[in-house]
Image (cartoon, rainbow, N blue to C red; front, side, top):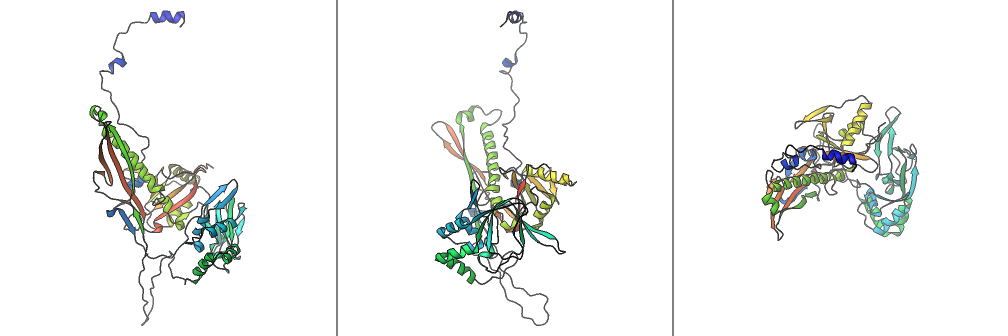
Length: 468
């Protein structure tokens, strides 16, 4: 300290009033309840119709369906080399339920990696189809002939899709459309010749393929369900067809999932520090909030019942230009009747808004439960940060029809469980241990079910970081 500072300190006036530090010892502070940044709006939990499930299991009965092979193929990458996981070849209709791991491993080794530049044609319409393409990375357009001679885009394929799979069973098959790379693509090829060559040595594969060829073709509707024979427009004494509605003999069952934690509160805290706020109640409130956040995350991402993982492959579409544009949202809505809600990450909603701004479009907003939310074609778009964004800055947008009466998406719960504080959420006292710590078991039971495949649609691989 300098001499000048020492003199000024000596000349400082004496304190004339009580300081704030001392005053706080006698004052009651005004305080907030404990805050938590993790809490979100949780629109999915609020808008999903919840169905009471007695017995902990919900069975979805459907008409018998003959459609198979509607899955995705998974790959592994080492440097610039890509290989298909052998068991994933079972997603191809011709290899569905074929379980010889050795033969599948050899087929995986016979897959040849090829690279296609944007605009390059993988296969031309009308040409002989003698191979199946497994799309490891990139986007492929399915191009057909328009009514007046121009081109029309029949659909988009992206990572994990396959095309040309009928070549493995039909030697005379031809390409019904032109497959053209919309972006740079990495593709694995598996030829019919390689499959037949292996079948000559592997009796199990030969028998499997022969068994598929011997199965008579089943009459189905456009959804793959067993057809119901009907007659209409006839006159006179025509013979009316006989029919019945066949059911799926092994319907899917959804068991209620569980999220749990043990909340611990020291008895000294519970006894002495409960004014003006009850410490146990506040600890429990924040714990329940975290549990509900995890519940919504599981409803979106769980492999067994999550919406993203269980959307039917036929209901997954790809954006035409990578970003979520109005045309893509229209395509998403057109795949189902009575869409009730759209879920998207906030950054995906912002990306959609940018695309609308570029075209001079201004999406409407509607009021839901006292909140104004954006909407497209009258369907509200709810933010949901549980939908993941990948490292490549892509995400998904979910559109769904809801309710049992509408054959839509429903939430599953069991209200009325012991020690319940909210529907299907209980808090049970577990006792006090030798260290005077009180324990409470906090449990939530829940699941979700998709009653028919077209109740849920997903716009996949939408870019959220493109600004021009």
